[in-house]
Length: 277
Image (tube, rainbow, N blue to C red; front, side, top):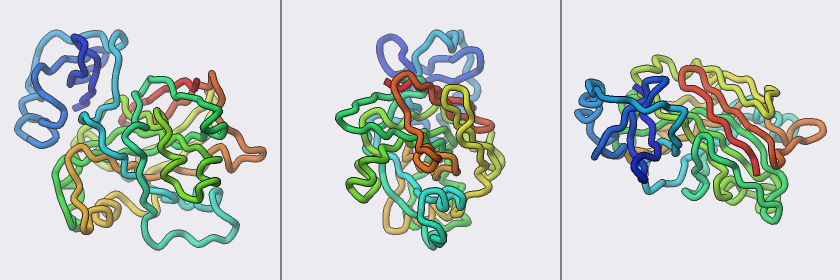
């Protein structure tokens, strides 16, 4: 099943995506579905008149209010090598950081470009894991029991701010720099999340071409490490890292500019498309 959040009757509304349409689900929030498996079972049997998908505005498919996005840095070996000095060893434990809630943006919304804040915005396609079952100190072998589904995250990064502040948070948290979507694909429709192709295109040119099987730390390890002493809540998003091909590591470096169109695509989920500026 594919679940989206869209503008309907002047408010964010849960919808079931059955392309080319979307079926509104009245009086039920995404959070209620995430926290109640019975609600999901009821949605599977819903019928009604679907609205044309191309005529609605999609929001990020996350519960309101947004929580910080839980991010993983340096989780693909080739990205570690392009990001770091030559000869740097792979991390021995996951590198975690967060993106502020204000960074969350819709799957087709514009990415703000404010040269007073940053002139070095970079692209990063990532597989997003949606937590559906609350948990703390989760064992790796139980991790997938806590996964509700998957989505696409573009972890847009201000490289000049990362360099200036010597950490990830500020450079990852500018308003609107985390497009998410276009929907959540429930876990039962993604039998192997560790074998999905990821692509990022800028103005139609492929910049990143990777596969989730190349993660250094796989999804169960990430969930186990994050939940150690820290409760994961339904609706939390774990953005699992990006493959190689980001802009700042190119020769010469490439950064997004107003008018650029960034497309992030993941096999089995779909494509998000955002214009800069």
